[in-house]
Image (cartoon, rainbow, N blue to C red; front, side, top):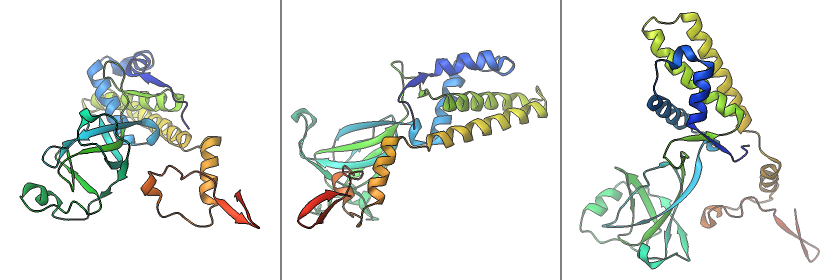
Length: 251
C-alpha cells in the first residue's frame, strides 16, 4: 500500500551523491533520469505507476496512443463523434480483437461490420478499433512525472532506497567492467540492490484496510459476476446483496 506521495528524481540524485560518491562521480543527471525511468518500467509494479485517462479522436479508423502510455487497462467507445463536442455521457466497453485480419480491415475499402461488438488492437503507436470514426476513451497506467517532465517515484522509503541502490549498482557496473572497482565491492552493491528491491515489492503487496475490505467482499460472493467488464469493474468491491425471508441484506 502506497501513501500517495511522490518524490522527484532530484531526491534520488542527491541521495546518490551523498551515499555513493565513488560511483556518482562518473554519471550525469541525464543518466540518473534514464535509469530511474528504466527502473520503474522494468519493475512494472502498479504502485509505481499513475492512473491516467485519455480521449482519442479517430481518423481513418485509428488514433495515436498517448505518449506517456505504459500499460493499457481498459478501452471504451464513447457516444461523441468529435473532441470538440464536449464530454461524453456514455461509455461502451471494448474487447481486444481476436480477428487476425483486424489491421488489414482498416487498410482496405472493405465494408465494416459497424454493428459488431466493439473491439480494438494496438500497433505501431496507434490504436485500431473496429469502427472508423468517433472517440475512444482509454484508461492506462503511466510513469508519473513532475512539472518538468522528469520521472517521479512513490515517496515510500522502501521504493526510494530500491531506486537509489539500483542506480548505484548500474553506475558501479560501468566501473567494474573497466576494472575500476573490485568484484567484492560490486557484488556487495548487487546484494544490497536485490535486498532493497525485495523489501519494496513485499511492502507494495500489503493491502490497506480499505483494500482488504474490497477483497473480502469479492471473495465472499456466492456467485461470481461474469459481467464486471461491462461496467468497468465499478462494483467489483461491493458486498453481495442476499435475499432471505423477504428482506435483502449485505453478505
